[in-house]
Length: 178
Image (cartoon, rainbow, N blue to C red):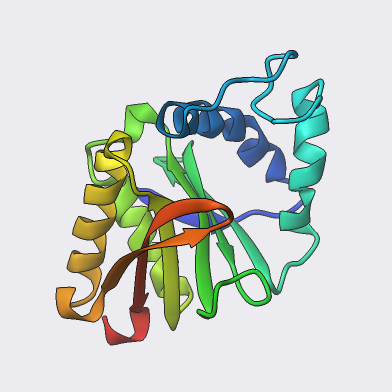
């Protein structure tokens, strides 16, 4: 099984756009979101997935600041990682804005492998945020295990703080210490 992480561009962004609604569906179980009256996971009157992804286009409009990666397993799309740099961070050099691996690729080390590849592409200070509630134990355990395997556990700061009007579990670390 070969896991690759590749930077997408405007010619391949449609693959991440195809996967994104699955990610939002997964998050709905953690955050308690419901789709709007048109069946789209947005809290406004976005009518179609095409309308939704137009807001998402910023990821391909700022190539030296925002990095949209596609995760593949043996050439098949398996997920994505969206990495931001300042001014879209919370004081770190890199921020894992979104990270998602589809269900058929979970539990077989694809996500850990992909996350490690992303960290290697951007060496420096990082922040990752995730939901702090019991509904999100799997993601919390994933990040603890992955970061502990990547950098010494003593080098990972973990704390709870308010971000974007929600309480989040936050991991901070420096990938240059790996």
